[in-house]
Length: 202
Image (cartoon, rainbow, N blue to C red; front, side):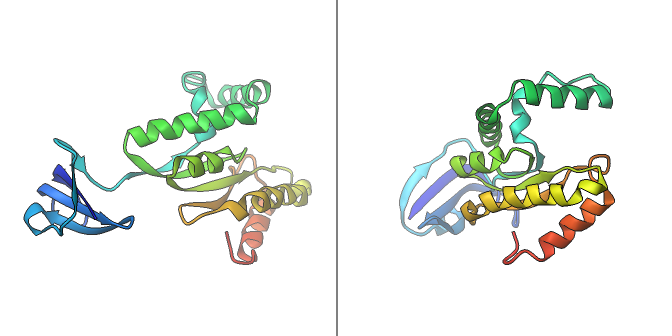
C-alpha cells in the first residue's frame, strides 16, 4: 500500500482534509482521511499540494490543438473554410496525432484526466490510449445530403469497426453527428437507429 500525503486532500464527496492521506492498494483507493487513521504503508509526501480527483474536460477537439492561434477573430464562414482548408493541405494523420498528444499533455499538466473528445480522424482515440487517461472519443459523422445518408453511415460503421476492438475500460467510443448544418435529418435518424441496434453497444 502507498500512502500519499498532501497539504490538502479534496475528496469532493466530503469536506477538505487538512494534511490528509490517500492510500492506494493494487491500483485502487483504499483510504481517504486524516493521517492518524491511515492504514500502514509506504509513504510518499507530495508536500504543499492539493490532492484531488482529476478534472474532466467534457468538450475537446484534440486533433485540432495545433491550430491554436490560427482561427481566432474570424466570422463563422471564414473560420470553417480556413479550418477545412488547412486540415486538407497541412495535416496528415501523423500531424493530427501529434496535435492530439500535445493537447493531452497540456491537459494532464493542468490536472485533466478525463476527456470527451469529438474527432473526425480517430487520432484522439490512439492518443488517449497512449497517455493512459480516461475518455470517450466521439467519432464524427458528416452528411448534409439526405441522398448520401447510406454512404455516410457506411463510412461511420467502417471507422467504428476499426476502433472498437481496441476500446478499454478507460477509453471508449461514441458517435457524434457533427451539426445541423452538416448532417441531414435522415442521417441523424439513421445514426440513432444504427447505434441502438449495435451488438453490445459502443
